[in-house]
Length: 162
Image (cartoon, rainbow, N blue to C red; front, side, top):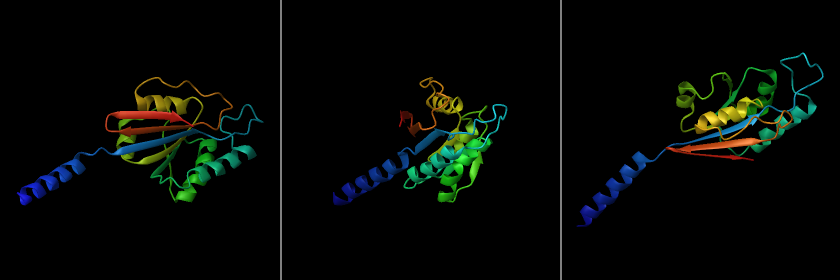
């Protein structure tokens, strides 16, 4: 009888571990404050306040084990990503804001913890795409501080804004 109980417990434990869902966590932020002195510059750098915020994001993520950092190819998003990526010894990976959350991105990030830096219109759109619903509107053009956190565990998707 003891052998039967042991075998049952072992089999149940083994099957439970095999069927547990991987958790994927996405942290999505908009780039930090950009230099607005030249209205014609479509690819500005961060201003001093933006550089300071980028460093503060690195402090925020200090105790979070990130597997990847993604950014668009714009100066302001790459500069926002740089302090965090450097502190984690991660390469900044590029994503196309016109093709959000495609099957390749999904498979590359499944089961991982990922930081994604985007723009006032692409960050909420990215979150909506992950969630499969239009939950969030575009961000105000001067909002550089909101953090969206999306967690996927199996079929369950949750999101919050900090």
